[in-house]
Amino acid sequence: MLDLKRQYAPLHQELLDALDHVLETQQFILGEPVAAFERAAAAQLGVAHALGCSSGTDALWLALAAAGIGPGAAVVTTPFSFFASVSAILRAGATPVLADIDPATFNLDPAAVETVLKGPQGEAVRAILPVHLYGQCSDWTAFARLEKKFGLKLIEDAAQAWGAEWKGTKAGGLGDAAAFSFYPTKNLSAAGDAGMVATNSDDVAERARMLRQHGMRRRYYHDEIGWNARLDGFQAAILSVKLKYIEAWNDARRTVARRYHALFHASGLVESGSYPRNGIVLPHEVPGSRHVWHQYVIRTTRRDQLRALLAERKIGSEIYYPVPLHLQDALKSLGYREGCFPEAERGAREVLAVPIFPELREDEQQTVVNAIAEFLS
Ligand SMILES: Cc1ncc(COP(=O)(O)O)c(C=O)c1O
Image 1 (cartoon, rainbow, N blue to C red):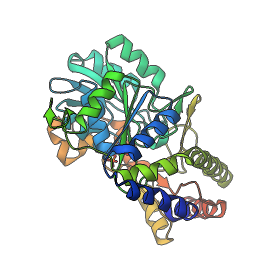
Image 2: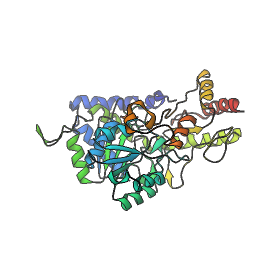
Image 3: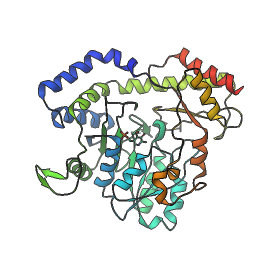
Image 4: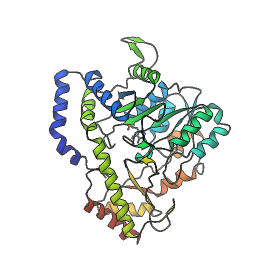
């Protein structure tokens, strides 16, 4: 699925020098290495504030809590995401309310959200948390309209979307606050767990900074119950190096995605519309958005057999995500059941992510496409 060694090889010495610098300064937690990364990250995203933290999960919690979302508040989000999109809402003390996805993009469907907002659960909703799934921004034009109409906050789960854009604005600067993950498989990745909160609000930034350090504004004076959600200097140093290359890597991902499109079309397997019949449906880039292709996800009705064949051929593939969040055992208490979100449920049965990373070669892509074509024809 992903060969991180190809990214590492040309950066080897630069990364070692960056780590050595942290050792020289002995600033292991927050401090100058983290502050330098935060400045560069904020400049690249075009946001006022970037705050490094311990993971994408903690970034989501910090973004919510710092934006004032807590007990008594409900937050609308998607059932088709990584678990943390919902668990962070619970961790903030708020109540997750789910709405179905758009089958063309797999992102939260603004029309479904509006139905929730107008329904009995709408009263308690204080925020919407769209996830920019697979590296493509959610429909921000529609969510910004809902934000105004219903007086809500918008929190971005941008864990998979460093560098993605909606109508010229980068993910991270669209909502009231945003969360990024630098988990090693993400398109901008650390060498361990790391995350970041981005915001244009001075208030949200100030609160998030306080909450990531046990609610301290002054050392050992605790104003609120925060948490230890700090970023360490080694991760920040690695991220500062990679920040210089991420735009080029995202461009390379876009090239790889274009090549998949051409190769799949040439195979004669591609079907139009959102739902597959006998062939495959390709991922869709919404006009006006800049997809960064964290994942390249096709749809097919014979997904599980296809995946088994790919595994036999030693071709990586993955299912993001096999169980929608409303059907997860840990979230039974939310009160949803099978049938509540048919698009998410159908997506969970049909999606298959094929290998994508900046260094993936055309001959390797051809091998992937040939194997899929052989199986489906
Ligand atoms: C959509 C989404 N949200 C949140 C997270 C949580 O990030 P992390 O694994 O860094 O805690 C991830 C990463 O796995 C993710 O893909």
